[in-house]
Image (cartoon, rainbow, N blue to C red; front, top):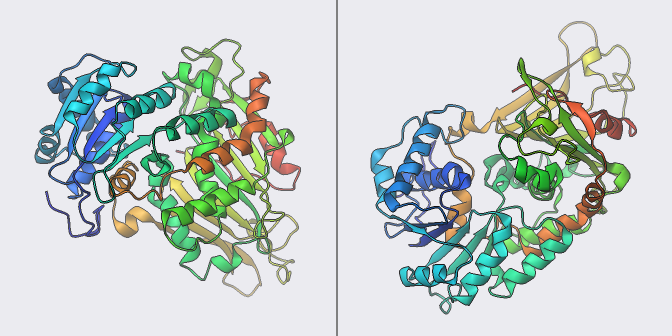
Length: 515
């Protein structure tokens, strides 16, 4: 396989293959490996970004042969490739690419807590190694400690072989546990070896935020309190918890989404310009923003839980009726927050965040709401749909669309053709897939590739993680007291309390979108 020439639809854009490496996947039989990691490896091979000496070793407690593992993964890839709604929608798996991968795959049935597992691994490993922890969070600390004890994290001197660890979310369950997990892993390895992954940072629309802000004179001068009224960040899902009741009961919407996914969008939106595109320069600014974000006030937290309702014409049950969910559960399936950032850029600008399951639409987006135009020339006679609350011109809104559409849209006012000075609101938009070609990626490709290169830009640092949990700790404490979440019907826009959170400031949420 050779690197592609960077044509539209290519991931590589003439990038060079990553160095030779063995990728050891803990949790090799799990859903994350099958649906996200292996499709991303397939796409990297398709684009010539993996070296011919690459190997993949799967480790799991499930008893399988290497052939069984290959067959399992092959079935999942075929299923995803044929599904036009899946992120990995290649249409058909190329047998040559898949054979390239399967020829380099082996499977090890092993116990994550057994020292023999790591002794066996050591006998199979040489040179560069990335350990991918696609396992339950309770195994993060023990697996890393076992790797350290077995000497598997020892790196050669400068210029020699590397040893890196990719750790999935959730990294900790609160501020104290995140600090303790960082202590455990950093006791056996260096910060530069740990890549705390968040797949939101693998999305092109998220990565493009820095380019939008700092490569366009059009946006940056207005990206501050003088021009912006407030910011809304939304991650809404129409799906419920499905078969993940056990996981969700101990996690909830807040832990599952806010200090990781939504805070990635928050930091990319709010951070100051880094001194360079160096990983630490960017992560310094992200951490600085979170450090300047006040811990959320309890009165600025809304927790909700979905009840039975209707989505796309189909009746769905409530959360407490889901499999493996307690009949009296107080776990939130929706959370909304109002945050304040104490920096000159954002002083007085509220950030409203919301996420929930069984919502009336599926979309992830950042909406930048600008202040009304101050001159008031069109305060009288304006068309209703282009008016602000006080009767003037409607405020401009820039929306960065993350899912399911990847792109951006700007709403602004124009004069409606005709003799009257009447305003009409229009939208200018672009779509990444239409502009650059649909890559059919799952969002992990760039993350895996950058880890192989040793570039930590798209990964979270220890201090960033801890600062994130510090902001939401008051909301975690509220949930720990088993505070009753506010009910909302499946298929709705969420609990009434979330609307009240904005209404008390004279604002309202962006309407839910179907889909």
